[in-house]
Amino acid sequence: MSTGIGEALRSARENQGRDVHDAARVLRVRTDYLQALEDEDFETFGGDIYAKGFLRSYAVELGLDPEPLLDLYRQEVSEDDLPSATLISSGAATRPGPRSSPPAWLAWVVVVAVVLVGLALLGFLGDRTPEQATPGGDDETPAEDVVDDDGESDPDADEPEPEPADEPDDEPDEPDEPEIEGVQLMLAFEEASWLRVVVDGTPVVEETVPSGETRQFEGDNEVEVRFGNAGGVRVEYNGEDIGTPGSRGQPLTVTFTEDGAEGVDD
Image (cartoon, rainbow, N blue to C red; front, top):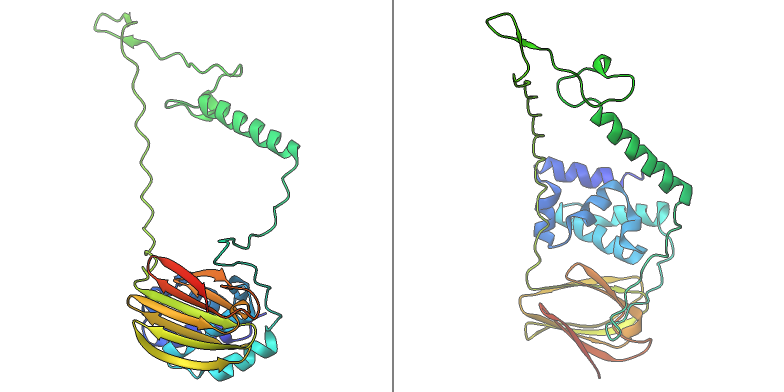
């Protein structure tokens, strides 16, 4: 059931003559995130906090007031955020559970089908039609004798070669994902935390952020973040969800660069 959020975003973008890839380059995010918002595939974001953060950013970029869209999201979509388990120190990532294997008989059915298709194709090589195939499945059809000038058949005459099949047209290349330059962070506050951020050597913010809020920061070379509650903040770093940088209630300073992230206890 559509909530109208995706249609509002898509209409605003199309009225500006823009495509999703253009908006993704400007916001420096992955194209599939913006496409998920327009398709209302909110499960892509792994939780309400991230979904609302991207929704707010995309709406502002398109010149829309994000608050009515966020209110609609809270009424129609909002669920409890998924628990975070990934830590920078351990490098672990949350993985979906294993999928059940298909039944063994299904694999045998596929193998038999492939063999039958292969045998059928061998029976129709050359210029023969299905009506010309021999009942015994013989792959060879006797060629008609070629008559020479004396009226005798020439057994050495070459059989006509089948015409080569047309090569399939190449599929159009899909646009490349925008390459993220510098450092881009999205912080999703699952719990309240004190925060201080220094971008490329310049302090930009120092505040206590309540739970349920998001903050975004961009830097050319590095972004240094001091967390008062490192276990209560989920971090997306250059398009990758790396989870919480520390444990609950832990003061932690993390420096993010293009080459990676390094954290130390305060």
